[in-house]
Structure formats: structure tokens, C-alpha cells
Image (tube, rainbow, N blue to C red; front, side, top):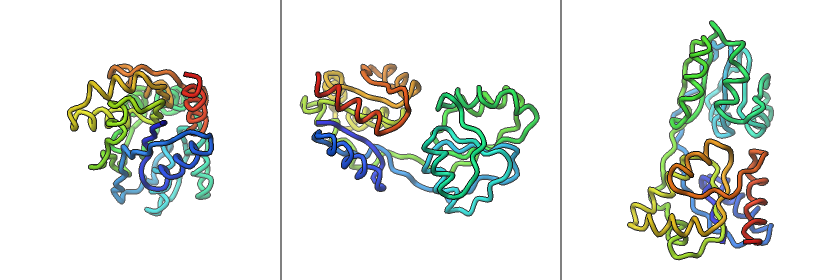
Length: 239
């Protein structure tokens, strides 16, 4: 059984359906709940950075008037911006905070940079831009919390029922272990997870997972959910 942890706002159902189409049994366990703040990005920045599709959707809902150079972390975020008819001017080669700092560092000295994202955004981005000379303002578009009922995947891991797990953010990893801790089965869930094929999107999530004692087996070159899911299903079938 493959565990997947997307928010239960349509993305979890889509993820379950996709993995089932690959012929795998799926356990959907939402590890994140999105709570919008109602804030919109400021429109007076020389650069504005959006880091997720959720952020784009909430910015559009709040009536954001895009100005200046619009930057997206990743193709998914860029595609969502275009769907809302916002321009996309810059996408880093590496879809991460570090990659975006490297993309913009030579151009932001003295510039006003608006960063619009969740309350769990990495300080690597804001600190890196400030070190490059930018005047950085951060707008929190949404908060990410662990749903009260999250944790059935931890129970399945503890019982040895998982063949794979798919993590698409560092916070999902932390919330999985927190849910296990709340049930008094952290060590058992961790052991069961390490007997399964663990796939993550990107090096930051890999670093978080490994720092918490999770053995990571799959990190796709393309930071895309479907690519990751296919790789985890293939590896779990071969395991």
C-alpha cells in the first residue's frame, strides 16, 4: 500500500486516483490543511515571488494586481500563474529557495522584493535575497496545519502495511512523525516507514526526512508529483 499525504482540498483525491491508475493500492492521509489568511501580495514590488500553486490561487482570489517582475518557484506554480492570466518572467533552474536566490541574486540589489507564501516558508529565500541587497517584504497568504484526524498512515506504517510513501514537503514529513508521536507509535511508524520505499520531492524535503531518521529512496530529477508517484510505485513493486 502506498501512502500519500496531500491536502484534502481536491489534491488528495486526485493523487489517490492517479496512484490507483498505476495499479497500486493507496492510503490517502491528509497531513496538511490550508487555512487562508485573506491577504494579497503587495503590488509595489520590483519583484514578486510566488512559491506554490495554492499561493497563486489565493492571491488571485484576493484580487492581486501583479506588477514588476513575477517569479515562480517551479513549473507548476508558473502554469497556475498563467492560468490566472498573470505573467511569469523568471523561473529558477533549481525549483527551491536556494535556486531562486541564485537566479535573482545579481539583479535585486536595492530592489523591493515581495515574497508571498505560506507561514512555513524557508528563511533561506528571504535571508538570501536580503544578503544580495534586496528590500524584502513577506506576505503570508495561508497557514499550514496538521489536521486533527491525520495519522492513519502512521498506524499502517507501524503495522508494516506500507510498501511506499510519498512526501511532497518537509512539513508533511514532520507532521507524519508528529501524528505518530501523538499515537505513541513514533518508533514503530519510523521503522515501518524505513522498510517501505520513501519518495520525496526535492533536496530540502530529503534533508528534512533524513535529519529525522527517515531513509529516502527516491528523489526524482523533475520536481513533479506524478513523476514522483510513478517512481515510488515502480520501486515498491520491485522491492
